[in-house]
Image (cartoon, rainbow, N blue to C red; front, side):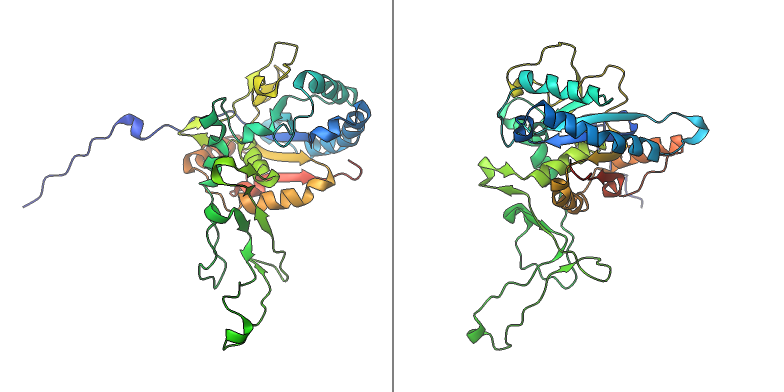
Length: 329
């Protein structure tokens, strides 16, 4: 006798819809400076954009022709570090930044605050939400022959791209097998290993200071349009038409749209033109991005939209990022 089929009722809200976001073909980051860089004065900013300009032109040209003669959608952005220090104010800092970019023939479409990568909201609870949500998406890649002796990243705050040097559990005198040093090894190394161990934060859970590498990983995911908060898009740019900038960083939205005619902030691909001091940080970013679980719906949206445009996008988010490190920047 056939059993009656069980009917399960679910509320629509139990399956939140993944909000769609608009996409440019390329998000071009024109720089990421510390507060100390700005304090060097207008000359420092003019030199920065003078060096950046030819590389920006090259990145635009490198996008290549698009199918059916379409014009590429390219947006520019600039990230200001207001998380690790606040030695100046938006009112004093942003106008000379925009003027220096304009002198070099560059337009900053979107301006972002690094503290926005910690939190998208203004409340205390919201301020920890974004970084914490990315932390919970980390899926460590277990290296070959690992036995789980090392505590997980959620406890240690350290993430690697392979097998660490084994910790000795006893002194040499008590080790009957004789302790032998073993080198670390990169997972998937080609010939030789480039092992990296990345610190994601410092301090206790309730007072964490997130690392630059971890926040830069959040920044890349936001620019790629791959982060959601219960289905909703995060760090959606806020139009800035007020003219004058505020005296406090917290009064400025996490991402502001400065150019009303700008192409979308989020993009299929990203390219960042950065000082060479950021090279090790961005190596760490790639290690982090390679071990983050991205929502399937967000990935599917990118795949479907890019395919409809005939614009090839790599399957792995980490491969959608690129960098330029000009000498002298």
